[in-house]
Amino acid sequence: MAGIYRSSVGAAIAIVAVILVLAPSASAGPLERMVARADAPPSQLTQTRTMAGPEGGLIQRYEQEVGGLPVFGAELVAVDGPETAPILVSDSTVAGLDPADASSAISRSAAIAAARDAVGVHRLRAPAVAELGIDPGSGGLAWEVTLPADDPPADWLVAVDARSGEKLRARDLLRHATGSASIFDPNPVVEQGSYQGLKDKKDKDYTRLTQLLLPVTLERLTNGKGCLKGTYVDVRVTERGKKVCKPGADFTALTRSDNEFEAVMAYFHIDRTRAYADSLGLSQPLRSKPQKVFANAIPDDNSFYSQSTHELVLGTGGVDDGEDADVIVHEFGHSLQDQASENSLRKREGATMGEGFGDYLAAAMSALITGGSPFDTCIFDWDGISYSPSGTCGRFADISLTVNKAEQRCQKEIHCVGQVWASALFDLRTQLGADPAGVSIMDRVTLESNFLLTKKSGYRDGGRALIAADQLLYGGAHVPAIQSVMTARKFCGASC
Image 1 (cartoon, rainbow, N blue to C red):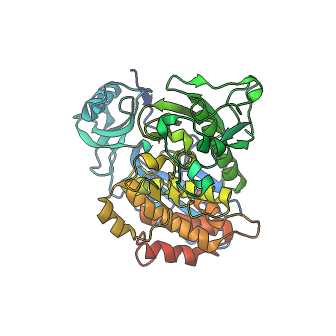
Image 2 (cartoon, helix red, strand yellow):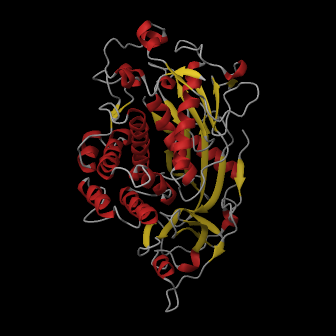
Image 3 (cartoon, rainbow, N blue to C red):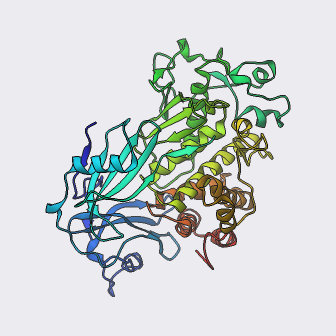
């Protein structure tokens, strides 16, 4: 399959870049002096985005370029709150890099072929993307290749030496989970308040489950033919993307044994989650294009969001993933983070936070529905009955472990360790409650913090992003509580 070439000079940047000389001086402002503390020299910093905070203040993002070539993953995020001192949220820029001679680089097609060989990708579901730049580890010339693999599904990010074609590193970035209509809201277990009498029975209808279907209104539909396409969501079924349509958009006759039921579930829960995110008053609007979803698209007990294609795919193994809003909302959480900071969280710690954020969002949306239930922090209550050792929750958002303990017990597996990040956020959600407008403080702070993440963000960066988000939204009123929880959970040292 033919690849796509990204020009080495700024084509990945959607706005006109401005090179800033940021050497501190007597006339420089506090934010400029903060940015000038970056590891990279000021002449190599390109300002890529400036955003006004929703309550005032400023967010600035920079990328590092050397000799007109990007330094992969080298970013800086700085925040100047409306009434607080500036904070350097994240700095992954690199000192001591010299320009590289691009004339000796292997071709784009050769780089893609080398990357495919390195990770064993035989078939792609979308074109490969290749970018020429500087490897931050070696300082040498490299190609960074994105491969949306088809079978098994993966979003490989492969760096190869631009002269030899040898693999420097590889990582799968795909966000996986193991895990008018009448639907489950959020799922049968939460609605009933117990597991009693609930079994999958291979997707069959039976009285107890059918009685738990709740009538809902499908908001924001835009398709005049009664199809599941709206302002925020475009849902199809199977990997072929068959449209789901009913006269008058009346899907009330569908039950869980119908193949289209999971599509209706996905539409309703993603639409509501996105509408809630938009209601929080964040720094920037999220993606205007509807989220494309393929329900019942793969036979695995697995679902994923792809940063490469921006598509969300739901599997059918065990309990169909589209029957549990926790799975749907978790995966859409990856999309929300990608919309706020595109292609962020590419390192292990960042990916762990990404999985934790998805679990937190699922728990938070459940709490908004129930008003507070012991099942809110039981993630994948319904989906988990097919694979959980206890036959109940797939994961939890209320565990008391520190991240150090979890990494030992979980052997650093990101979904398992991510439970600590989800639990820390949900602890704060419970502790801080709602603001005077009645909005959950941590829902707002957590979603705002996504704008401050980078490709290399780790645990400490995530903590500092929460603190900076609170400074932007609430003048730093909740920073002591956030600092306390982040340090207690060992995401930060003595402080973030």
